[in-house]
Length: 193
Image (cartoon, rainbow, N blue to C red; front, side, top):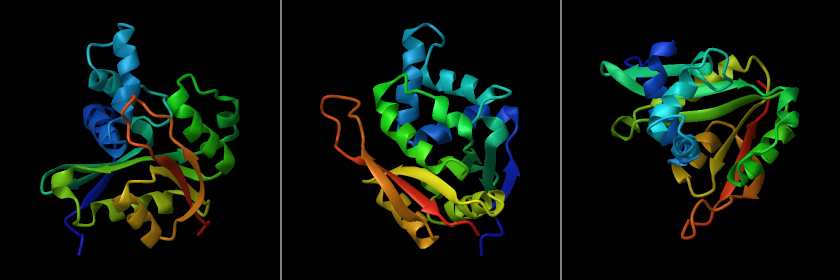
C-alpha cells in the first residue's frame, strides 16, 4: 500500500529540508525559537539558523537523528528521534516557552523520544506519517516511545492514538504572543514493544 514511500537515514546535505519540516512539525514554534539567534546576529533568518542547527555534527535532534521519507521523487517528511538520556535532567529552559515541554521530557527519561515528525501538507494522508512513526517505534528497540504534541493538533493526536500512544501528562503552553491561542502540550507514550 505504501511501497512508493522510501525511508532513508538523513545526511548533512538534508539540513535545509530538516529545518523546514521541523518547523512544519512544530507549527512554527521552531522558527520562533530560532528567531532569537537572528536578533543576536547569528544568522539572517530563522530558517537559516535552523539549517545551521540541523547540520551540526554532534547536535542531539540534528541530521544524525533524522530519517527522511521520500515519495514521488521528492522529500516528503521527516522524523527526528533519539534516546532521552539522564542528561536531560541537567538542562534548564533558557526560554520560558520551552519550560513546560522540558519538564514533560524529564518525566520519560530512558524512552525513545520523537522530537519532530512532519510531512509536507501536499503529501499528507497517504501513509507517510505512519511509515515514519513505525520506523521510530522500530528504532526504539523495545524501549517506550514518547513524544509531545499540541492539544489542538487533532491530526497528530489521532495518528498517535491509533498507533498505541496514550496521554501520559499535559502542561499548559506558555503563550508566544499576546494573542496566542491557548493550548497545552500533551506528552504521549507508547509502552515498550
